[in-house]
Image (tube, rainbow, N blue to C red; front, side, top):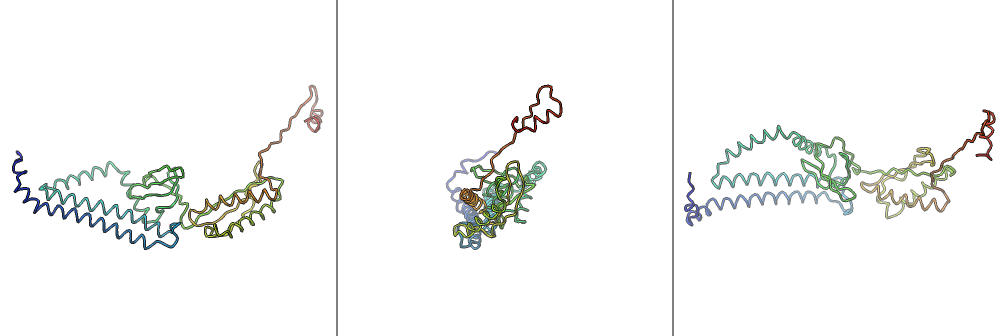
Length: 305
């Protein structure tokens, strides 16, 4: 069928189309913009309703509201513009029934060929429903770790301490370790020389922990006082004493670094030595022709080691 370009570019025809179908197309575009803007406005208001008075940290409610808000905004945006595109095609005189049928058939084919994507979407839904983690949490999963920057139904975006961005499909998260949910904990293993008095070292650690908890700069970060668990292990060169702090989410690393610094200063002031790798070497020199008893005499003689 030949296209009558003269009719298409006829001024009267174009004017008639603009004042009929064109107005409806513009209304559809404006409607989609209104829906997406309204969704953004409502979700932002809900997120702000969960904000607390502390701007430096994100509470559990703030993280969950931000996570769900982003997902809802993206979902509404996709649905709104998808429906708007179909309505615009219909206003342009294009029969959308074959398109819908083709999309349905393509969806079935993609469903069979993209099972991993379906798995990712289902996993993303359960992540949100079960509140496993939220934007702002620090997690470890699929061999990488970092702060959660974005969660979609298909993948989760992490940024590690080096600034590297990791995009992890939700279906690949068989095990997720959330290091900042509700509360955090820092485990500190302090090694000292074998010649030191363990009871004195434990007392020094408790004093340092109490001073740190009383410091106004760190007091709000610590939720429970220092707990000294005792001797954790007897290593080759060190007696390892384990202690731990319970802190607010994401504050365990700051508290741990400050505690180690203060322990180093306290040990230096009291002359408590940190372990230095050392090894005793025993050299057995048996004289030529010496029998078993003579060889033992040589080994036991300190002057001949």
